[in-house]
Image (tube, rainbow, N blue to C red; front, side, top):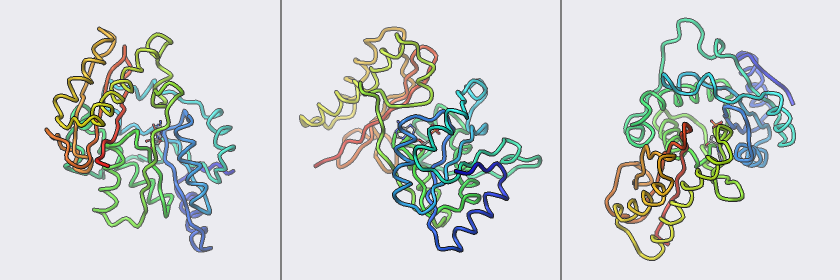
Length: 283
Ligand code: AMP
């Protein structure tokens, strides 16, 4: 496994692999890796001759007052984990390498970033698409893997790749959960045991939504009422940022589920903002 910190060196290596006719699989991450990240890497290992991952906590996707400075970081542990996942190259650039002085170009995907996290975190997705576009230009992958846990991010990246004619296959991977259903996230490390238990209300409410959908319920406000009820059972500990039923492709709010919808949640447990979602589909 090789560690690369410079963009020029990464580009040179990728170019060389491409000339040799090898396919490049890529998993971008912000580190503090867990089983969710590793599931993406294992799929990448199967679907590429060379597996590249990046570890970069991207400052432009954090808003003022968000957790950029305190975001968990543990490079030593991350490197040990990725070794076991068969990663060939770990790209870990510095902030100055990605955003050198004079940097002033951003990528903006319009409509699908308006709702959900885009509404609560202005500029977040502009930061995400800008860094992912840059990473794509540096790593030059044939395939890139993203988690459905960050569903709006996945849809946004797919849209960017399509709209900008990037010759990359974007593959969405299912959400990996803890044994009790909590969606794995680097931010779960902020939760103490009590909050960790309370955080289960997100998944519990999504399961309830799935259950009533299975019984024939199609009305968004009835489903959301159930979700809110379950989350509000936590009292003051849980604050709903949003709970929405959206079209699974446009991410616009819908009143009635027809074919396929995403139920998306952002809930703050104590001080930790967690997101989760579930896709509901007609059989
Ligand atoms: P992050 O390090 O949080 O930026 O995540 C890097 C990638 O891992 C993104 O594509 C995420 O969607 C994905 N990811 C994060 N958590 C999970 C999870 N629990 N299951 C599957 N993928 C995940």
